[in-house]
Image (cartoon, rainbow, N blue to C red; front, top):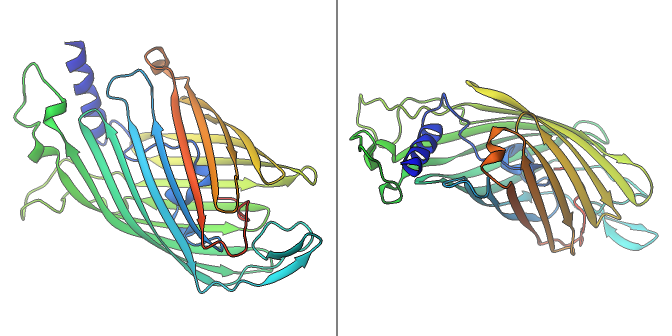
Length: 333
């Protein structure tokens, strides 16, 4: 009976917009804010690929499991090379000896996200585009958009109910929706400010409904604001504090406070606090100009902490077509 009740509660939390946010939770978004803001598309000189998984609330039956793959690349981006004391490097490599401004360019990308909670699954595939325009020698503004399909699905084989409700069926939950997002990102070598919105088409109809039919699966609009600054403490150590604010009516507003410390542009550690939810510890390493990897652990501070042992998140990054052999991304994202 307890198992059935738990599954039913999860079902309600994920399918009724008034109960919970409809987008996956991430702890390591500061190294891949592309998942939250399409304006970041093509920000670097190379094709950036991220593959990640998040296992949330370990020990709690039916807890969320998220998997994501994303890739984005610049188009028509002018790349020059400058000579530093260590030899020839790309202008996009973090170069403390000389700064070279960015150039106007386009970016394109794709995201695929699967978020599974018990018998429920949300699958989201979006294409993204952004245009980056320098407005001063050091500050660039980008505007981006995303568009794709979001699918809600329910697998009855993974749930049992003491008193089955005819309304809870595959035809009731299996729905496809258009997903449209917009974003802007203002950035320089030392700061960033971003604002984005997802699921902006708040439609009462999905792509499967007959004419005149209305569904209860109304998409919530999500608005996210982010900001951060980079402090060069020494030649080897950099501190990057940042904040994220997520607005999703009628769900409560969440605020994340983050601090990352980067050593020699190779290793980093970080801490994060999400109000009324969790603390997170993070670490990562830029293995080479091709690969990087990171890990985070969340300790839940809400009443749910009595029923789980925390959340784990792993992200693998690839830098493809990295002609400048950039090890550490130039821009904070």
